[in-house]
Structure formats: C-alpha cells, structure tokens
Length: 367
Image (cartoon, rainbow, N blue to C red; front, side):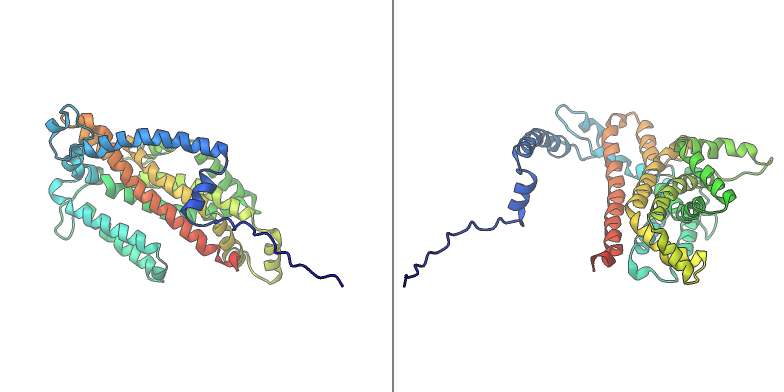
C-alpha cells in the first residue's frame, strides 16, 4: 500500500482591493500607460495653473470697495467691485430704498421652488400655495397697494427677474409640452399637423428672434390703445420656446413605450386619457428626466437674453452697474465671475435634484 504524501497548495495572491481612494486612483488615473501619461500631463498643468489662479483670486486680491487700491501694481482680482455694486447687480434698477421688497419676494419664490421639490410638500394645497406666493411676489414687486409705492416692471431686474422668468416659464411650459408631445402622436391629422408646425417653427429660430418678435413686432398687430406689458410678452415667448424643446424630449419617451402596453390597456377597457395617465406617461417621463432637466437648466440660463428687450436681469444688471461707473468699469471680469457663481449654484442644484429624481423613479427597476 502506497503512503499518501500531503502537499499543500501554493499560496494565492490576495484579491485586489476595489474600494477606497487608492483603488479609485489605480482604476481611473493609473490604469495603463496612456491613462498614466494623461494624468501626469494634466497634473503638471494644474500644478502650474492653480497657484497662479489662487494668487490672483485670493492672496493678491483686493477685497475692500476702493477702486484706487484695485489699480495698484501687483494687485490681483478686485472683489471690492462686488462689495460696491452688489445691490445693483442683484436688484437692477429697482429703487434703492425699496430693495427690501424684491429681497422678500425672491426669498418667498425661491422657498416655494425648494418646497415644490420636496416630497413631503406634494399635497393638494401646493397649487394654492403657488397662487398665494405669486400674488405676494407681484404685490411686493409692483406695489400700488397696501401702502407700497408703484414700481413699473421696466425697473425690475437682477436676480428677482431671473428667478421669476425662469420659474414661471418652466412651470407653464411643462403642461404645454406634454400636450404638444401627445398631439404629435395623435391619430387626428389636424392636431398632429398643428403641433408639428408649432414645434418646427419655434425650434427653427433662436430665442433672440422670439423675444424680438414678442417685444417689438407683436404690439404692431394689436388694436390702437391696447398694450400688453413687455414682461408678460417676454414671459410668453420664453414659455413657448421652452415648451417646444421639452415637447420633443417627452415625445422621445412616448415612443420608447412598447405598443403592446397600449393595446393591453385598450383590452382592459381603459380610455385614451386613462391609458396615458396611468400607464404611458409615468414610464415615458421617468425615461426622459435627464433631458427635461437639461432643458430646464438651458432655459434658466437663456433668461440672460432678455437684456435685448431692455429687461435687465442678472447679467444685464451687472453690465448696467459697471458700465455706468467708469471707476469700476475695468473690473467686469470679477463681476462676471460673481454672477457665474450664482448661475452655477442654481444649475448645479437642479442637476443634483435631477439625479435624485432618477434614483426615485428607477427604484422599481432595482427590485
């Protein structure tokens, strides 16, 4: 009988760690020689560029509202221009002594927007809250009641005007976009043709043309003595423009729904609107959340174009604040950086909220 000799198995290498910062660096920055070379090049450029930016923006910057100190040799960024002109940049041409009114109005409207994005506030009274807040916003901004002095809309500007145009145009454009998207897939030729012409006509021209038509051309077709406020005309123009683009995004989601689901709904006896509301639209909108949010962000930034019709929103108010004062005119870069940060905060917040919505609507697919 042959004796069995025990031979141990050679030790195997430990498994590669796939979690943690070191593993992330190896996988994303040092995966192969090409990635490593690109990492070294980009890292070298950043090591050369970042210290210069910090010196200009922080260490050698002038923070006090003194334009003579900003022009001294060796001085970097002049953030004193923000300290000096921030009220004009934020509130535009609104009367200086009445700027507490747009401040409160902006806080109310921004708070309403935030509340509308939180699930615990998705109650039946939320539309009523929108009516109340908007009424308070226009009462504070326009005045002529409750002892407030009247301030015409052509003097509204800055951040309050930007948030007003963006929020109202997005809220009003979404239901229009939904109906247009459904109309483009309608079996009725008249409805389908009308929606197609609307979308192609709006998408075929830039927003500047729409604003120009709404502000300057549209009043020419009105009866003598009949006048619509320029703010309302611009708001309608932005709303129709945003709706056309959102409609195409929603239509893409509608086309992704299998036809068999619609046929199954018809077999169960559901009407057209019941099928759309309970089966088609929930799935279609969940698929196009990134596209819809992309249009929302684009519309928020496109509000800067209303300057061409003499409505000085955030960007126009900044130009107005600096161009009217020769002492601070050379420091427009700092002004643009300031408003760029404001735009970034709002756009980044919308982007993160979009990611949260995507996770919520995709929970059913993870089961």
